[in-house]
Amino acid sequence: MEGLKKRIASIDRSFYKTSLSEDFLIYSNNRERNMEYFSALPDFKYKDRLQEATKWIKEDVFHVNRPHILDHENGFAILDGQVLLKTQISKIRHKHLWPSKIKTTFLKKNKIKSGIVLFDVPWNYYHFVNELIGSLLIAKEIELDPDIPLLVPKKLLHSTHFNQIIGCSSALSKKKWIGVDQPILIDSAYYFHPAISHLDYLKYFKSLLDFDWSEDSQYGDTVFLSRAKKWGRTIQNLDEVENLMKNRGIDIVIMDNLSVVEQILLFNSPKNVIGIHGASLTNAAFTFDAKRKFFIEIMSQDHDNYSYYLLSNQANYDYSLFLGGSKDINENFEVNIDELSHQIDKNLL
Image (cartoon, one colour):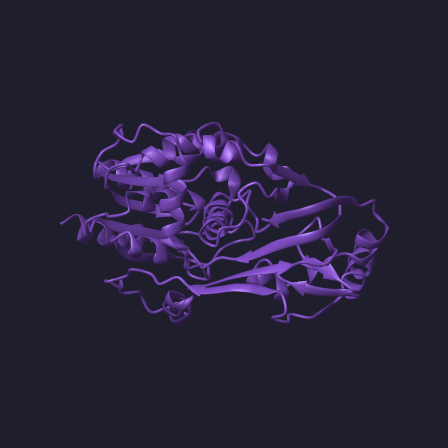
């Protein structure tokens, strides 16, 4: 039965064809990165891809100024039976994310005159900052009407980090946020492709927050950013790793236990960072100029991600990548304690 459901879903999402023309492109820009220093990377199968990512600086804005359907699940624009645009590069490769013909045809549709579509997994904190805040910066730079409604997945409006951020940003709280949970008939919509992992977006984000930036962190000069095991994508032998940190006087910070505000203020002054790959590493770049502090990112040997390689280098960290073993079904992986100890000691000296 489950196999039949997957087959039907696959067929349902194959009806739409793509037409990625440039007809609706209204703005294109290369946002250069200030990366004076490129950290050396270990030899592993994704090394070339990480280094190539330094060139991913293109920003595009598309304006679909004809009545069309906004797919409520992943933010695709549908016009005359064609998927016109993608709002995230990877989505075009993954057919299971494509719009459902059944849902976009038969579900009741709300009608909206205009909006800015912000659908690139913004309930993930990293993507909230990079894609959503990045898009708002671009919208400001190209002087779009600041009162245009912002169309986001409805579940974002109920997420903890969204409400914490809105609660300390008068600028963002004044925006007209519309949560989308069914297809939309829209007359005019803007779709954004921000650059990948750009420090300008964090600087803009900081300018939107009503914080007392004079506060200093209660933590020491070097911190280990850990993850709760319940979320997965963490270290299988985490207890050993945390004991290693304690033995070296390194503060252990369980980021899940801190509010977004506390996570940001943690990096109000430069710190050495050791952390498991995850969205909370985004906040380390709030330092903006780490003055050659070190940044050790820990992830499995078969995880392909360049986000914090790019952000940390722009923030002048001395980045290094520590690779663990292969990930299991929950994306957890084991690390070699002796090798990690050697890498930390080399940086601490």
